[in-house]
Image (cartoon, rainbow, N blue to C red; front, side, top):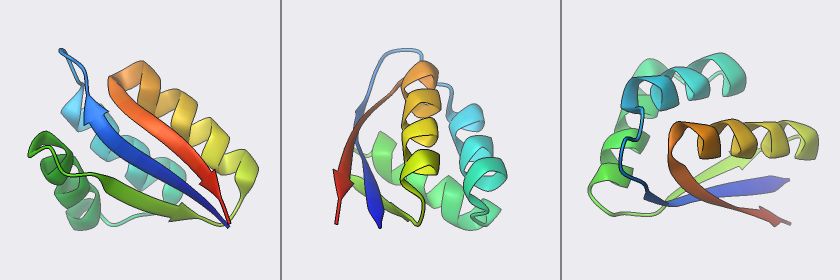
Length: 75
C-alpha cells in the first residue's frame, strides 16, 4: 500500500482540478475529495491511501502539476 501525503499547496492551486483528480483517478467520492482539498487549504496534511504504487505515482505527478506539494510513502 502506498500513501500520498498532500502537505501544502502553491499559489494558483487548481482546487476543482484536484477534487476531480481524486474522483476520476482514485474513485473517491465528491464529498471526500472536496473535504481533502478544503483541509489542504486550511494547512492540514491530507493522507490518501492508494492500493497501487503505479497509481500513487501517477496521482502524485498530476497533483503536483495542479499545484499541490506531495510526498509518497510506501508501507
